[in-house]
Length: 267
Image (cartoon, rainbow, N blue to C red):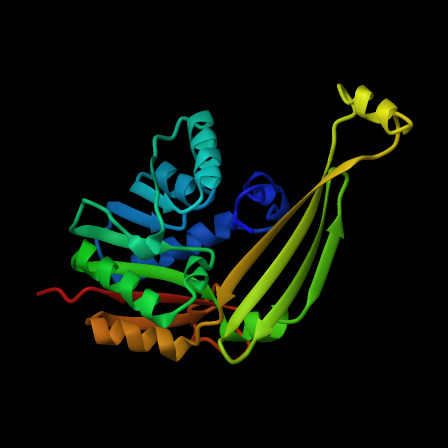
């Protein structure tokens, strides 16, 4: 099963409770706290552009990379509708191939790195990011914490029914490998207009509700904070800081999101 295939088209509906404005504000606060001059940004795992587009509107020269063609298509539609030009590239960030070096900032928001499910691959991505940054350039990202994936989401079941879409979300956590498997079944209500033949064929009334079912399986790794910091140190990143949730305090044992900030040594 794919990750962010058909789900891409309902992603924004199901994530409509996420305060992306606060997310962007927090990212900017980390950039400002660094004191670095940031004009250009490369965003990894940019999805449908919910972080990318607001940053572009604020004047940053930003390019987005994502593994999902469907997500990028939606990001492009939204950016064009808003008159915001974007550079979008379809890539697996583990095989990151970006021609422009000396970047001011590399960003990965909304737990994109949890989808990198081995520490070897995470090291590979971070090493490429280090190469792409200019001396003094900054690396800002967040992850869903070990606590969130293993305790809050792990081996849990969730569901919701809305007017046009319903979903069931079953999770299975593998402690030995720190992997969370998320099985998502979602049901999209079919439009009645133009579906008369389907209703009549199956002997249903026109006011009966019909849904189309889709399934996706997502796999995330519950990275520990110390694993992330260890990789950053080994690669030579400096000024490594981590923050719990959307504040500027150190993460607690029950922080569900951890933001990281680091910089390339300015030689």
